[in-house]
Length: 259
Image 1 (spheres, rainbow, N blue to C red):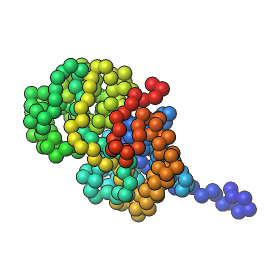
Image 2 (cartoon, one colour):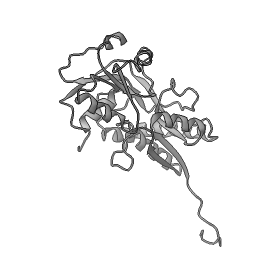
Image 3 (cartoon, helix red, strand yellow):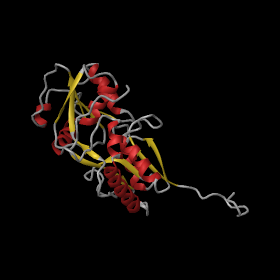
Image 4 (cartoon, one colour):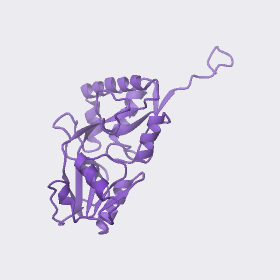
């Protein structure tokens, strides 16, 4: 009860729900010491406004469907291309570039989508990649073993295990996610990655069905700018071996500290 107000209950804090599949270092295991740098940013920014962040993992396709329906507040890691109907702020939360991982010594060099012919490719179901790669996947996904599509909450690890078991030849993912996961799983010496696209900005995108979506986007914008000015953003990113994405775009990922 509130002091001096018989029968009154404390006001409940506002909560926003953020979902995505595991995409370290952007968003990682909920409840862990390093839940992902975007999760840490969101929690600090919204906590300063008295808003709690409820973060959990959810398969990407379901997360996008849920945010469009207003079942959740936002998704982590969306591009404007795949979330054109969602609510975006001005500030990005990072840069993403497509990359391919191969077993060390496999000897593959990417030279356009046609160079994937003859190689078994693993990718993530319902992800959006470079347009020519999206077209390649659409054309080959049902053609035997040419393209293997997986879904789930920890799909990057699944696909890398297929790679090292020689069930696929190439794994398509975000460059930072590949490098971070290889380091976190102790696989850096067994596989190598190459970027195959220019960096593209990613965001926390909010639900068009939520009347507070634009306000949440504005709070995130202001909070990110203040964190950058104060140096707090650099502190968070350093925990993941990263530097500010606005400086030289997406920096190379160092091995995750303390693992």
